[in-house]
Image (cartoon, rainbow, N blue to C red; front, side, top):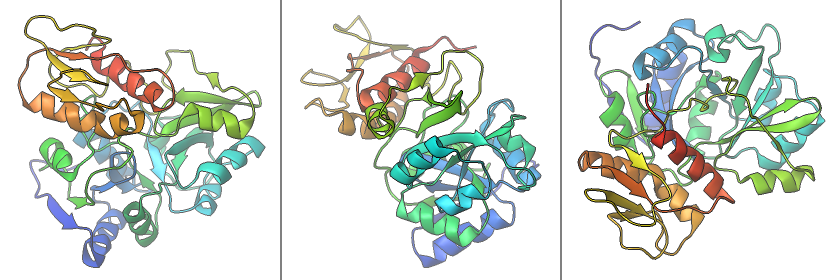
Length: 318
């Protein structure tokens, strides 16, 4: 564990920055890097101390498992057992904003902290070109939750990471804003069926079209995958959802043709809204502690992921 503050480097997205990020990851340091969804906080998944430092830096509960990021499907097969359903989804959607929770192979060398004691492992092959380069250069599986203090708004820009974690991690690789803007969709498997564990950047409809069957939805309150805490992604200000009108003192996070302090998408485009969600929440969070009201968001396509994040942002905080 580290003690006290450390100097956080801001690395540029060039050959030297990628090489430095990869070296730091290999040697047990914490490095934030962009993916197509949000910025991740990476550590060598085979280094117990490095993985423990993720939980320490974020203030993340140790029962909350981590996603391991890999450069290829082949690398994922070295770590987990794939059945036909998992292979079908990996072939269709990797690289991309999909995480699969699969049985962990023995003797992979992964820190047990990564899986939080489960016999499954959450894996993703990100699509972002910079993430791909860093992962390939690092040559180790990289555990990487979102690069923000636990429970707070996820980061979609390097500046968000620096605001939340500067002094607690070694480096941030600045790759500009993230394109998708919400975390990956997480799918597990039970009784020969695919199970939706968390909606995210890959719409459920695309998964169901690939499988030819509806996804089962995980209904238990038990934590079996990342991103399932009831209160999560939260600004300091209280959040009220499905607001058709404003109450006194509230600020409006709008959607569609409404007058708002900030609007996720004036045209009602869910892709634009997802990309703007955490960026706008960060901006409102920095703008004061007045309550935030949020316009209704359609609950289809990426709207499912947006509404999932907003429900967790609005949940009572322990």
